[in-house]
Picture 1 (cartoon, rainbow, N blue to C red):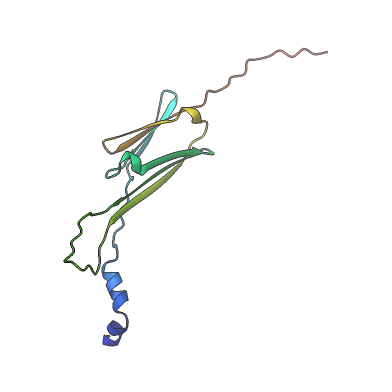
Picture 2: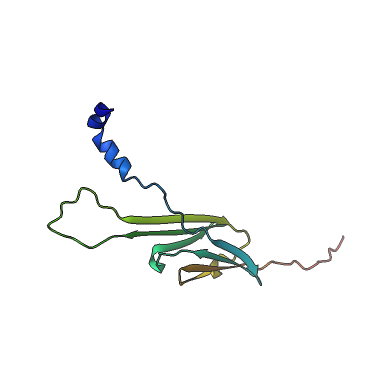
Length: 133
């Protein structure tokens, strides 16, 4: 055992500081239909509007949020062996069909992202009498 500790000190050090429980944000996701649109609400605590991107491409809504919290404390008298920063990211992909892509809108307030995805207008073909010759 002692030989292992002598040969692998860096490995033991890295495992000690390993992130044991990666957090999953954006778990609270609500989707509902209201009038002629879908409403998507995602809880994103700890993120700002600038941390969030939303794309809609080929019937897939992609919500990405990423932030890194750094400390600006710098002390000349300290020689750090290890310093950690909190970095959090999440991605959600949801398939929607028949969405009016040009009218999608979103709002981020109090840690909640709310998106409105209007349904595409259904084209109802009128009956047409066919003349037989």
